[in-house]
Image 1 (cartoon, rainbow, N blue to C red):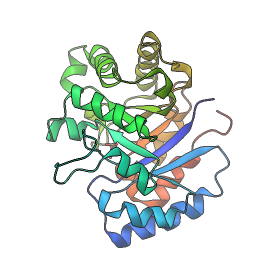
Image 2: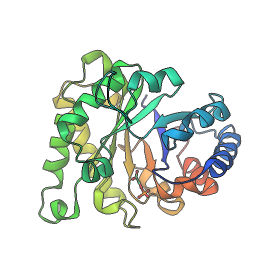
Image 3: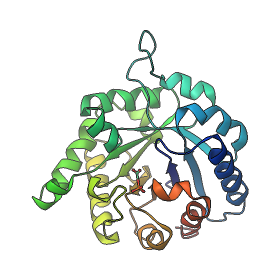
Length: 252
Ligand code: PGA
């Protein structure tokens, strides 16, 4: 059985007050979800401690990024060990904003993913093509190569801690979503790549991200290879985020 996950990536948004309000609402509503979805919130790192206290283990908490070293003189960075020590369960790795704005390479993604899982956390490794890559017919090859390189350092025993998020760059924060059948087709490709790498592909959860909203979540989550969502903008509105969690079909 694959984990069903809906994760809210707050990015660099919010405040202490908004964070309290969001987590309070999401935690209370998450208790009544009966579809087996694991709800994850991924706040800015400065709020993680408060969110963990408030979440009380009822919802999972993650970070948006980790450093690519174990420890040492890396001012401003946070290690995977620290993230686990603080009580988080998840870390995002290789979000397209990190790749595009902070020059994060496939090599850095591979190192971070391996540090995250060897620390005992789950890594949500993000992949996705740009509009130009899609329009020139290279979407599948770009995404396949990101999966192969980003997960190249994962040891056989650690695959159960890997989650892959397919987020077409052109769909992030733009209001444009991949159609559910395009997303399904890329998810099937990703699963094929994982299989070819010797991973237990049928057990690895694949999330879709990019303008997921309450009105398109149901169609996306109905696809056989879409095991949940990575939600940006809509995760900052507590009711919308919970509606997305509810759209997951029970027993899927
Ligand atoms: P969005 O962001 O839902 O605002 O498009 C998704 C993401 O970047 O994870």
